Length: 408
Image 1 (spheres, rainbow, N blue to C red):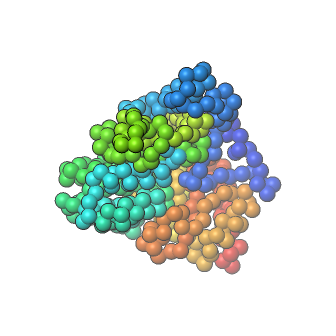
Image 2 (cartoon, rainbow, N blue to C red):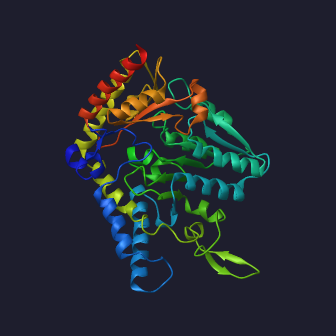
Image 3 (spheres, one colour):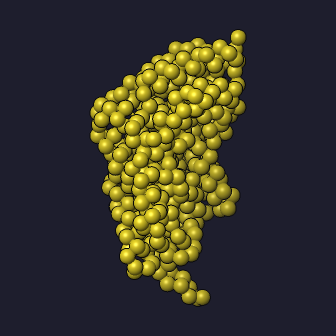
């Protein structure tokens, strides 16, 4: 499949913005959706719009099968057991669920939680909230000037009071693939479980949970071509079994009385109430396309060429400072956060928007990382497999024009 053939599956990519062809470089925030996903959402809304796991009528049975077959598809995609797949509204809910439930089961006053300096707020704040509630301490793995995690520091941070380490697979600011398997080995050698924020990793890495060496892995559907409001928390089954429910309500129970409630087996005990019955099956449609992309050497090679072209550009333009530039360039995904000397990031983003280029500007929900690098915000260009070399070249030309307009 060529990039152009892939693009035809995404209707939104053909739209115009201010009379210009859309160049969508904000994929780290939300990817665009292929027709197979929107068709699936429409099918579920029109043909299977019934609550799941409850009624015995045909539509409810069909809806339940669509939902549970999606669970099996997700499990197969990452090499897990379906009982280890909990559906959520996205990475944020997945991590909040993990932080609350893990904290209730395993964290006591004086214990320690470790995160990294490169985390999205969604992998900082839930752990802070849990630490406040339980009287625990939050510790931080620093990043070096290139944006890479200081793994030499990690080992010294872990003590006999450390209960869990939570790190990102790929920073949404730095675009660096972290060595999760190595981090997992360090953690497990000291008897500490590892949670991974996979919001960016799920799209740019083939995930094999067994090889990845983590205990919990969270990701969102809307960053991997599926509908918004969909997400996954993978958890090692024995760990999930030991964690109490995050929410109470319908369907997460085994038996309810005013004296005592018992809970459904994992993963059901974590899925209280009516689930996102129409949108969750779009995960299966998105995974089908993503699996096809991962198996297509031509697409992957072209995506790598575009990545290297932009990495060379950002590394050579003296007006631009690129954040996240690892020594091993193969560990860099097509995500580039940068600042321009003498120009405000939001001003550039607004000018680029008028040229049809969609970028992200601001703190990218990573304020501590901004503080680490001494900036108030950055620009971010993040690409997916449907972005072309021509778009990359147009982006470079447009950025040059914008910078000249603002720095003369």
